[in-house]
Amino acid sequence: MTRIGVISDTHGRTHPRVFELFEGVDHILHAGDIGAEEVLIDLRAIAPVTAVRGNVDVLGDCDRYPDEAAVTLGGVRFHVTHQVAPLLERLRAGAWDGPLPDVLVYGHSHRAAVERVAGVMLFNPGSAGPRRFRLVPSLGRIAVAGGRALPELIALDPKEQEALAAD
Image: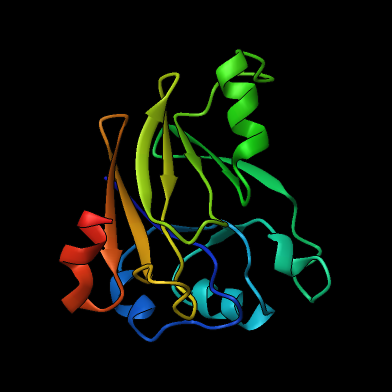
């Protein structure tokens, strides 16, 4: 089994629970709005990281990361971006270049979500940065077994797990 940590919208901060929740993961995907290189340094101390930049990263030390990244982990094709809208248009129009990803990871909205579009799992881990609006700060994990991606969304405050599920 391959275990993947998925995080987004950290905005320059590594929440202390990230170390506990990502313990034992084989790889970490960061879907942008990193905010500071220190966040990626913290994550790389846990596992290898694939990161993309978000809209807050274009003027900071994280502007060197790409807008999109593709990586295959445990036999599952992942595509990582920050703002999903342009990719979602291509996906719905059947205009994707190359083989479709199995999982499209994105951030930006700060709203955790798992859904399927055109046979592709869309996975937003929510925001692991400071609370914004009334959204529950969260991250995600994906277990890959037998070529299948099994997603999990986790509230950073365990008391809010039920609220995250209802969101």
